[in-house]
Image 1 (cartoon, protein in one colour):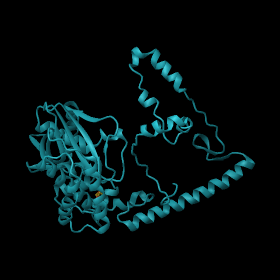
Image 2 (tube, protein in one colour):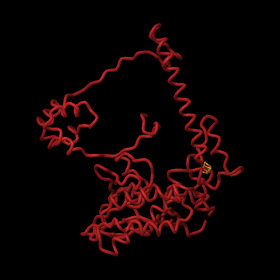
Image 3 (cartoon, helix red, strand yellow):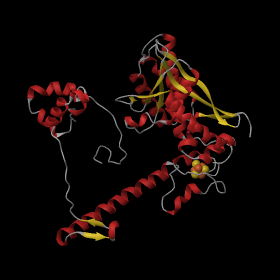
Image 4 (cartoon, protein in one colour):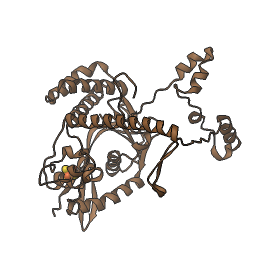
Length: 391
Ligand code: SF4
């Protein structure tokens, strides 16, 4: 085994979150991975963001919407394989980034900042992890850093997932390893498709103790990786589309799925086929549920299977236990010494589509104030719906 062991952050992510055999092929054996249109588009979005931040730094401005066209034109020149549709998508994401980003020259540290850290994997060997941070800021006291990672994904993750993001945690470790004065690193995902930052509420942050735990975990995993102990551990998933082993004789697992699950779609045509199957299965399900319901209406519940695994189709009673808001407030006030000030913010937020909001709107004098107070938060739900229609 060579002493010059290196792994870049993207390959480390494949090892940790996707498929160890794929990681071995691209990182240890040096087999080139397969790029796809999504990855190419992501590179272009990152390139635009880096160009825009450098422009703000150079011109000492906090924002500059007028610079969008010229910076985007340079990006598009560097990525000539983009289709017209991708081009329009990147323009929309670039607009979102420019709208949502305010540059602070006092805390700016770098954009696309290359950092490295060494992990001791035992027997006198070390592995160098390399990463490039999309955006890095350091507080005026030099003890706090903020890492921003641009994501062009379609999904908006729940806020609680951001602090578990493996990539952000590795970036935080890179910062701690290179900046001895930093005590805490805050992470933020810049969702270029939606023009928002995650987490939308609360914060995702790590201290040196968190990083120590991560490095301890990586030490054993990287030792096994470089010794080839994980090279036959194959975990199929959508990432198979980028894996060079996805060929006859190299890896058959990605297609087999134990004979029950379809293989991940690798192009639009295969994805559409899967989507059509979902619609057909749902329609078949709805038709059967309606027929069963008619039967149960007349004859009573139907039991399938036996013992503890039996499923009963019928009308099941549902019970909900609610605590009135007034009672919660009273309890919190009575125990203020235990819980501090009541978190009314969370308790009393009212969804604009809820019954409570409609009732409040009945008082005409409140309507304007209520409309002004609306705060929009974004989330995504994976589903399918008619264009302009219901789900
Ligand atoms: S094709 Fe899929 S399962 Fe097979 S090695 Fe590659 S990523 Fe892993």
